[in-house]
Image 1 (tube, rainbow, N blue to C red):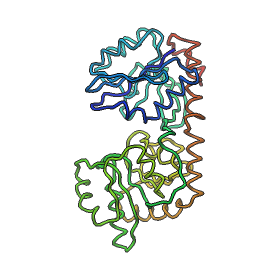
Image 2: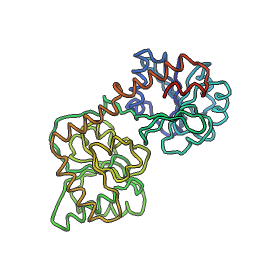
Image 3: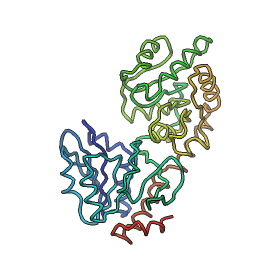
Image 4: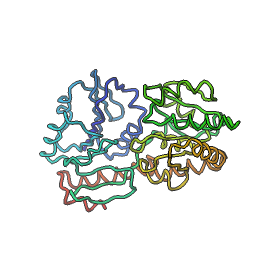
Length: 346
């Protein structure tokens, strides 16, 4: 049995970038364990090429119609996000009774009627919904060969985000808090990785950063992010993406987190070890919360607790891989999609 994973429509996507994804690590382990015979990853992008390693292939295609050459009878199809130009193909696969899996990636397309199993990582619950779909508690995989714990000196008090610097990611909130602390005579050492993107509050950040103790390394690789997480006492996440992997990556490196919008994150990330501060546009309150969290989480014991929580709740080998083994045992038993059978997975 083969898994076909429809990843994205993304200009400039590179094979080497996807090879650092937790999904790539997961897929290789699935083939290695005999859970599937092979995995085909499809990305619709601006140039075509294919790469194969250990039974897993990445196909960059310029026309999504090329996926019809890849999908074979009996394949399980997993769609991430989903796009309207893909619908004719998706409807055809549904009519042919392929099992259809889905992960929303903050698109809201869980509501589309095509999916049999929806991976959902914000509730911690598994249930069958009113459409007969199995909504499955899912733990987004983080590549342990890229993100891992190191016992190294903590160079930074805080790491501000792990993505491009933009109002939607909220880095300006932390910068305003640091500016408030400076006025009180308190300086925290910070790092703010990512490239600037134009937006109203972020334009002000560009002017404020030179007057604060913030390193801005620009775009960094995931391997470099691992180093930054390990060098930081606290990771601040202020965006609203669905279970943004920055928090998961930080925890995999043993870096405690402060989360400002917990509803967008997996429950285990904010119900056990990490700090939560629901931001209310008051830099003074946020600054005070950051100081308290840095002091509370800076010890090695808390870092090991954070790392342990991630391993217990989100390890690929101990959590995610067994889930997919159970799923594909089910698909082997029922190779033709039939929602009435999904209750057996509860």
